[in-house]
Image (cartoon, rainbow, N blue to C red; front, side, top):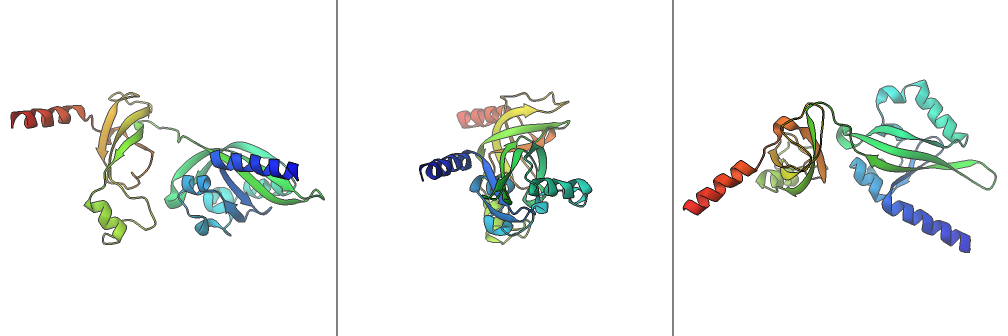
Length: 220
């Protein structure tokens, strides 16, 4: 009983800090914690009972490699690597993950537990990773969320304007560096997030505009 309590405590600790999802030995989703669902943009009710393939490139799921992937797990093999997966709306997400077959007392695989850490999306030429400090809420967002504007499939992630700090710059970006404050208005949604990868050309240095506002308010 003491060991069972200790094991449950360890699992709870992992679940608090990691993205965890459980599958049948053939890949059907049994359950997932909030960290996993949040990282991929789903509610548990949207993925429970679905197959793991919903997070993968269709070309990969149709391949022999994918078939063998689940065969190896069903045999009890432990697998760990960096994987690319796709969240709601096709968002590309890189994860460091381990797939852990869980055995019953007879040594049979009864489920597979995946424990993952969401890795940062690799930047390509011209991209910048921005950590948001403020996200704008305007009438456009309200109209989207109320359903008045049919420009975003709901549930979805609205937001078109934000300010933040540059966390990382991709190859070829010279206008900005890590630590710079930036702002932007984007034609693409999904700004209601802690960070975003965006083209450097869409970013604005807010300092000149702040100086104009300061001078205008001082003058008047």
